[in-house]
Length: 107
Image (cartoon, rainbow, N blue to C red; front, side, top):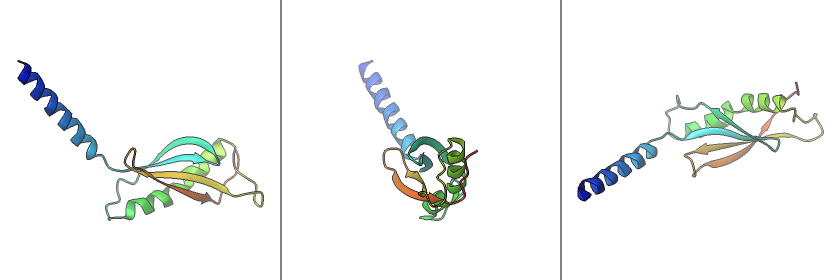
C-alpha cells in the first residue's frame, strides 16, 4: 500500500509540473505611471518565434493608456512622459519592458 501511495504521489507531481511547463508565456501590463495594475494582453494568436514579445509591446499601448485615464494618472504634455511597464514570459521568468504612451487623457 505504501508503494502505491508513493507511486501515485510521484505520478501526480510529475503530471502537475509538466502541465505547468506547457503554459504559454503571458503578456501583462504591471504598472502605469507608477501605479500597480494587472492587465492581461492577449498574444496567444501569434505563432512566429520571437514575435509574441513584439506583439506584447505593441498591443499593450491602448490598454495601458486606458488604464492611465481610468486611474487619472495621465501627465500633461511637456510635464513628463507617460510610462508603463509590461511583463512578458512565464511566471517567475518574465522580462520587463518600460514603454511610453502617447495618447493619454484623464477621464
